[in-house]
Image 1: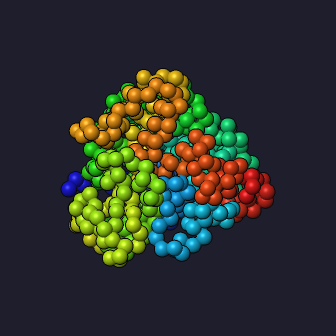
Image 2 (image 1 turned 120 degrees about the vertical axis):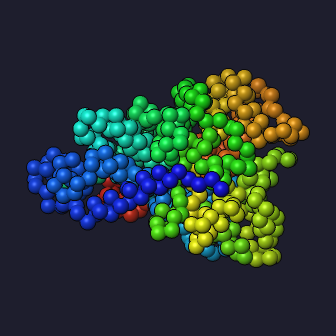
Length: 513
């Protein structure tokens, strides 16, 4: 079995050790002069030499690594992230048992969620926690000495990327939000919500800054940089930022840049994309880095565990299951069905038999993209926790970029270009079987739009795209309306009531909540 890059885990361990140490030696009694000059409440270049002998480069890197760590915890890519970004779609059901998950998860499934929903609040709070960490990193990095300019710029690019990512999730889910671009002190006032337009502009600027500072994925493969942000990842998320604003020309520029870079391709077989061996591979532009190393249980992620087969097989909590309507949406013979859906009573991709519901499994369908392969479970360091804590959530795949390129090209009446990119994705899925997934040939813009939308649903199923795609396509009312979704309300999640209360009314609620 192919194991992860050891240096990556050393870097993560280094961040945890340093931040544990920093937590024991913070000097909150700094002089007024230092408080006037430097950010408050954490290490910076003005005070760290007096308290701990940590080189600038290691400490600066640790701030950035701690920002990456945000993906791992309960407020990262965990229970409520999956709930808020997947369960409301028509592709996923809540799963588990009827009452499990309480009002938080049940209300996501039937669109009765309100400002007290724990899932949407955790998505909101977790995003701002990531933003806070990125701002702390930027505050430290910006005052690094000039003889570390190359490292300083690269770390700054990573921090801009991570901040842009978290603001992207906020804009996608909540609309315009309060924009914070510095470390806040106790006397700083809460900023009111910005317009959605200004929020998208802020995100654009972060990703544009990151693009200028980050290395290409092609320059870092096989190094200790594995799993960290790259230029192409920033270009990809910038393209997604433009898509939500229907800026099709700009979208095409960024997707062209990613595709033209040659650092990613669609060569990975459909049934291998979500294996551990393909983590950070040719298909991947950005993914959260999880692992399950004995002695470091805090590094494990719950992303796969909460979606694992529940019941007799005991692979997880059983939430976020593929829906019958998703299963029915696959074209006849499409091999992506088996790579997306685990069917109870049948065999999983690695040959493991999954008991049927009558044999003790709770639900009929499970997410195959978080399937815990037998050879991964039996790895020596995972015997005590066979629940997929090592599985990396793929947050941006190359196929997503190719399909966004097709979508933008079609909206710009470039049907030939759109068809070419659409066929790239279908051809990979088709493999050597010419009898399935026929090539799409229509040049009618509306018909081609529907074909691209269908392909996004199938290719990216269970990857946190479908719900937001339906909203941006203005299809949510027609598709989700019969299930309880309300136009004029559910285009965005409610701002958490706790946030509004703490702001004393400065932060205002979204309409109709």
